[in-house]
Structures are given as structure tokens and as C-alpha cells.
Figure: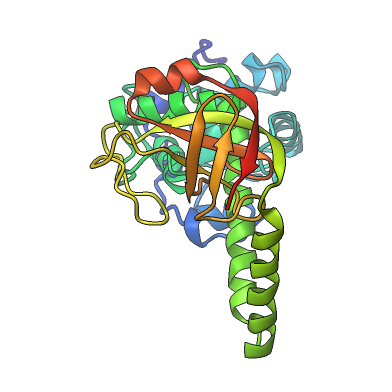
Length: 303
């Protein structure tokens, strides 16, 4: 019997098949969902959770009515792969917490493994600083809003396909950067010395260089935020500190920079979504951060 359309069917039932342990931080880039969770809905299963999954896919136009039958076969696998591909998720044909959370469109008041996965990703990217407990409360809602604003996507506090797709891309970028960092640490002492010399030369060459960057704003004035930058600056104790988050490969940490129209700032922080010609400007409160929005500015590296 076909279920009534509902985007929250699984959230209210709790999805026992997805009661698993999330290990995103230890997961290599490009990992399949089966490596993120110890159990999920996949090909060969036949139960009511599969039927509810199919109903969600049907509502979104990825399955026909007659294919909603509670049996996870080739048609359901293909539908999930098509859905994952369309929304930038790992294309594995498995319904794990990320795919389920995306289909459900998580919102404040929801709970369960998909919410926990959402929180894990927000923690990795620095938008949430709390234990991932699987409860979508105000802190998680604020973190989702901040992430959406930083990505220039729909800002509504709901974690749906667009938000999960952007989260997947950004967390994979973080994992890739972590892998590259670990690889560099395995170089010989000679290679290390050469790298240090190269970085020193790059820092010197950077002085006086002007680049155009995409600038967003952030604040430490938020519930659960540590307020301490990657270089140790306590922004809660110094709310008016003129600090920016940078990609160290573009603007070396510790550099003094002149931001056109805003004055001199110190490159004292990094961020999971700050890559290439992109900076995040520290503001003393949320209101000023929201007012700043996203804009393109010229930045001159002074020293």
C-alpha cells in the first residue's frame, strides 16, 4: 500500500537501520557511505524503511508510483545514484545518513543519525562547536544558517539537498587538505628544509602584491563558538580585533594586509571553506557580519 506523501516519515520513526557510529574525521577523501556508517539501507533489503525511502524518492521524481514496493532492487539503487549525482553527494547508491538527511530536509526539532551526521560536518568546517548529539536545536540551526550564508546558497536554516551537497564538497576539501598535510609531514629532513626555504621565499615575494578576493564575514559572538583563531587569538576577549581568515597558500598566516575600504587586518585564522582567493573578515557581532554579506575586494599584502 502506498504511503501518504511526507518529507518527515523517517525522522519520526527514527530509522533504526541507521543507528550507527559516524567517523567522518577519520574517513579518507572519496569514501563511500558504507565506510561512514556500519549499517544503512542498500540493495537486497526488503522492509518498511525501504518503502519509506522509495516514497521520498517518488515524491522527488526519481521513482515511479509502481516502483514503491518495499524491495530495494536495481531501480531503487539507480534512483538513489541519480539523486546523489544531481545534488553533489557521494554517488554510491546506498541510503546512509547524508542521503537520508538530504531527502528528509532536516529542520529544528528533528533528531536522529542524519542530524548527527549534519552536526559532524558542521563541526569539521568550524560552523558548530559542540558534541554531535543528533538533536537539531538552536545552535545547529544557527550553524546551518551561517554555513548557507558563507556558501551563497538559500539561507533558510533547513538542511536539504542543496545544503548537504555543499557540505559534502567542503568536508571533502578539508579531508583532502588534511591528507596533503599528513603527506608533507612524511618528507625527509632535507625536503622539509627545502619546503621551509620555499615558503620563506613565497612569503617575501607576497609582500606588496594586490589580489582581488571574495570576502565574507564571521564572528566569535555565537553560542558554542570557541572564539580562538588557528593562531591563538582570543576573539571573545578581543571582539574588535581586526583579523581575517585566509588560505595560507595564498596569504601567509601572520601577514598584515590592507583591505580596500576597510583598513589593515592580520591574517590570523583559517577556515574549512576558505580556499584560494577567498577571505573571511572577523566582525564583533552577528549583525555586522550579516550586514557585510559577500563582496569582492582588493587586498594588498603589506608584510
